[in-house]
Length: 333
Ligand code: CP
Image (cartoon, rainbow, N blue to C red; front, side):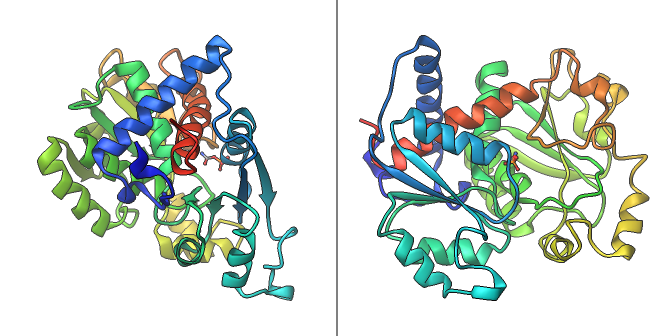
C-alpha cells in the first residue's frame, strides 16, 4: 500500500480501518517469515532515530531489533546524547531538522505531546509515536495482532479494558488508542476505571462516530463486573489524566501527596484477580502491555495462568513495528 509511504504515525487517529488491517496483515506475514527463517531486509541501509524521554524496555528493544532484522539500524537517543537537557537547550526544531539530514525515520517517546506534534511538523521523514500522553499506537497494534491470533476476527469481540492500581502514573495513551481501534475495527470495548481516570473524551466521541460505521462500541463503567462479564479479552492497564501525568513526572511518576492518598484508597477494589477473570468467558485471554506492577494491578495468579498471553503480546511489538517501519519508510513492496 503506497499510501502509507512517507506518512507519520502520530496515533491510530492517523490511519483508517483499511490501512490498519493492511499493517496487521503485513505484521502476520513478517512474523511467519521470521519463524521460517526467511530474511526480509526491506530497509537495507536505512537509519531510524529512536528518541526516548522515558525509560523503555519493550518499545526501545523491539524497535532496535526490528530495524536490525529489516537490514537497517536504530540509534537510541536520550537526553544524555542530544543537546536537549535544561542545561544546554538547543532549539527543538533545530534538533529535529538536523536529525532528519541523517536518518530515514524517527520513533519518538515523548512526555509532552506538543513536542511530538512539532517534531512531525518539522521532520521531512516519517515520525512514529512510540508512546505519548495522548496515544500509544504501536502498543495498540500489537494488542490487536494478539487478539487476532488468539480469537480470530476481532469484530464483535467484547474487550474489557480494566484500570489497575499502581503507584506509578503512566499516561492514558494506550487507552485512547484502544478506543480508536474499537471504533475503526468494530469491537465492543468496555473500559472499567474509577472516577477521575476517564480517558480522553474527544477521542471517545471520535471513536464512537467511527463505531457507528464499523459496528463497534465504546463504553465507560465504574466496576470490573460490568466490563468483564462475558468478555472475550481482559486487557489490564493503569493510567492517569494528562494533567496528573505531567505533574507526576516532577515527582518520579507518583504525583503529589494528596493525589497519591486518593489513589491509594482505590488499591483494594482495583486489582484484577481470579474472581474477576471468572466472570469472563471461559476461553477469555488476559492481556497487559507491560511493565506490570504484580499483585497490585493484577494478581500473579492471573498473570501466570494459562489464560495470560502477556509475553505473546510483548513479542508482537516486534512484528507490528517491523510492518509499520517497512510501510512508512517505503521498504515494503
Ligand atoms: N509497553 C511498553 O510501551 O513498554 P515499555 O515502556 O517498556 O517500552
